[in-house]
Picture 1 (tube, rainbow, N blue to C red):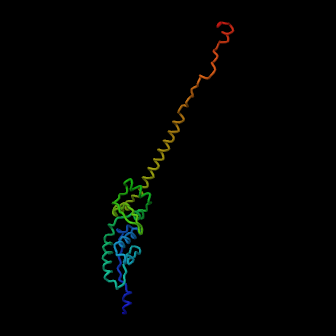
Picture 2 (picture 1 turned 180 degrees about the vertical axis):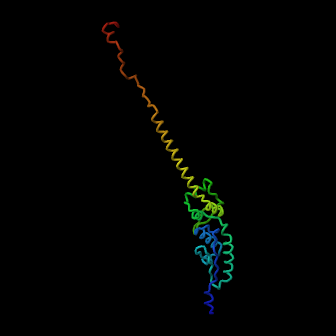
Picture 3 (picture 1 turned 45 degrees about the vertical axis):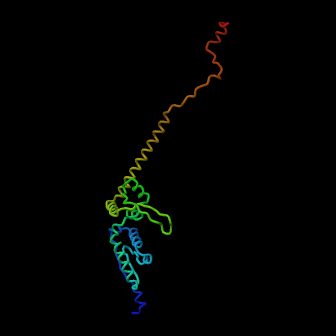
Length: 209
């Protein structure tokens, strides 16, 4: 076989991500791919692709030594995948929750953080810090339908809050109605003297002369 044809023959290796690793989420699978790419040398990042839950490493036959090194990195990452921390966008996809729900449940303690991670955005100097989650804890929440329970709890709490607000508003209106209006005091200093009853009779009889 000519040498140029030998170079076109690819070295291939495929790994299938387990359900314990992906937790049924393609977003999580993509996150694992990105974690693997971050561990590979820059020149090899595009040598691995994700199709469904399958990771495929493909390189020219001439890069046998580089392939062996990359193969070892990917194999180790795939083995560690089930224990990799779950990042925000992954947990939202796994549990089918909104960002606002994630923030609320994290703040009130129902959603437990496994720590934080700080990363630099691609091509930018700014860094961001976010909470990550234990994959086994996330799996437990998924299995026992915790999200449905939390949404019921939130709906009940919201309804109770509305009732309290309505009662408080009613009480305030009632107090305003029963409050007596203030009577303005009259300033008699500028008023004309009131004519006493019977004064005319005194005047006619001349009793004051």
